[in-house]
Amino acid sequence: MDPEIKQQLAEIHALARENHRLLRAVRRHQMLDTWGKYILWLLFIVGAVGWVVTYLEPLAAKYTSATGTSPSGLFGLPTSADIQKLINSYKATPP
Image (cartoon, rainbow, N blue to C red; front, side):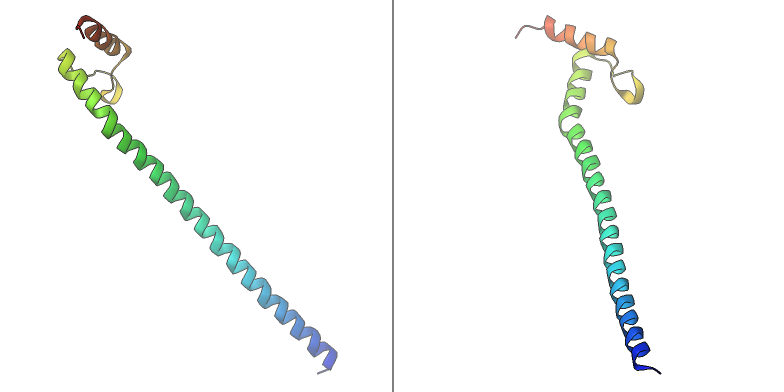
């Protein structure tokens, strides 16, 4: 084999190896980025649920004990009429 062709073949082989290494690095970073986004969204959702359980559940319990009724809205959330009743019950009670 001609030495010049052998040298060009070695250069092409080295370039192919470098290209393969770079593509693997890009794929690895892309996969880590995707998993990072999933974990971040999971943390946001868990944080939101934790906030609801910590702060809104006691308010809902106070609402049901203050009015004697349970919320009648979608998914058990209070409707605007229920909220108005709660406001009126707090206005009626002296501080």
